[in-house]
Amino acid sequence: MTTIRPEITGRVAGANDVEPLAVSPRQACFLLSVGTTRLYELIRAGELQAYYEGRARRITVESIRARLARLLACAADTKIERPRRRGRPRKNAGAR
Image 1 (cartoon, rainbow, N blue to C red):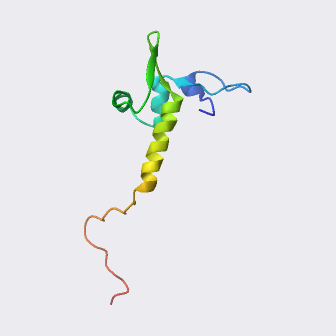
Image 2: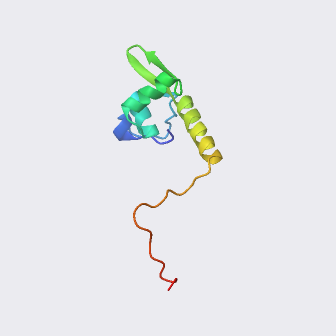
Image 3: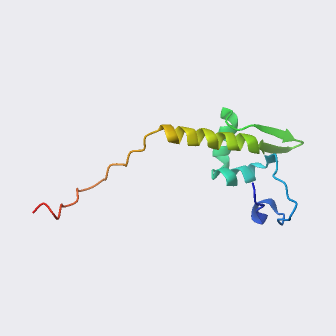
């Protein structure tokens, strides 16, 4: 999190803010653009590292970055094909 988002963290960005080592589940959901159910599935699957600080759960930012790196590596290896169009085929205007 290079920029502090007040709507998520409740803090105002300052000149000497440092990047957190761990974030709350709510912040992790925002960073990963997933819901809470998917977040806890990722934790259970071992894709994200989480721990408890008292009663509060924290997810490490390092594990979030590692997941994104794995997803990007997988996307680079996979050939992306355009999905087949559904419905009627288009008319060829030049084929008359």
